[in-house]
Length: 343
Image 1 (tube, rainbow, N blue to C red):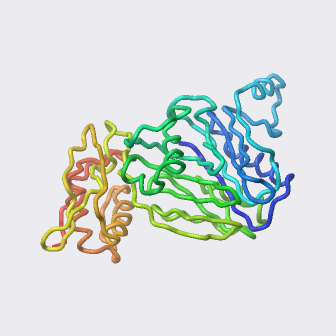
Image 2: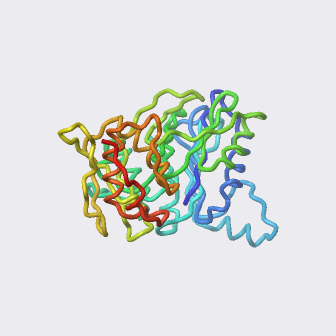
Image 3: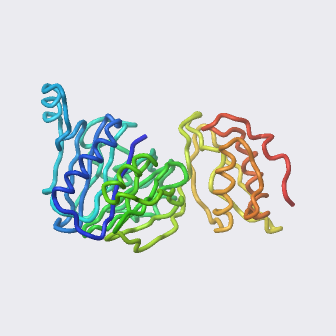
């Protein structure tokens, strides 16, 4: 699994501070062996400055063996623009799930957008030109030449954590319920990243005593500029795959839900093994809120009714949950996990 880091700050960072931040991000992400990249915008930068490396770092990373440094500076890399004072940046450490190479290294960048992705997705929409073979480039095309967020539920299955950077220092952060993405308030802005430890360390560059990080709520796209949140939107989720049991849908059910005549919500049965095509039909906000509560409990190997979980959701969830048979990520039988339904 890849790792992400990023920041949005109100006061422009000077060039020396930007170099320090890049080096720290590279150190925090050095366990991701298949690539490192960043994109910066805002402040003195016109457009987006970016760098992609297949390994190592060209920015002051220390090597005891001089030959190791030679190996690093000779690896393929792509750079666009000069490093200047800026107000926003995103970083990516890559552990590859497909082909290696700089063309598959994040961020994917053009003049209007830089995108980094943590996760695995499958795209089933119209064929679009790609420079590499990475699934994340499909997402990049979705946000540059496609219809953006509405394509996730229509053309994709899998899971994703995303950071999107635009000119003038605008950053959007997003995750579905599978990957983690933490947010931390610092003096004059916010930082964000994949792991609690990385975000806590990264935040110290901006604030001697940062606040405790918190997990970003799933299926929300939050946009920030100059260290302030400017918008929040709810994103209809893509069908999930676990990639752990015959490429089956995790938890054994999809997002296709309908209403009974009695007003109860019922999970539709799907042919899930081995070729699930996925799809999203209408679903209520009540179901979505209940789904998240139920899912968090189910992956712990149990199912309990929470006070804020509706009876309508519970009835539909129980039926869809039983239809699944197995929870692919944890490998436990769920056939007997929900013996009772609330009528």
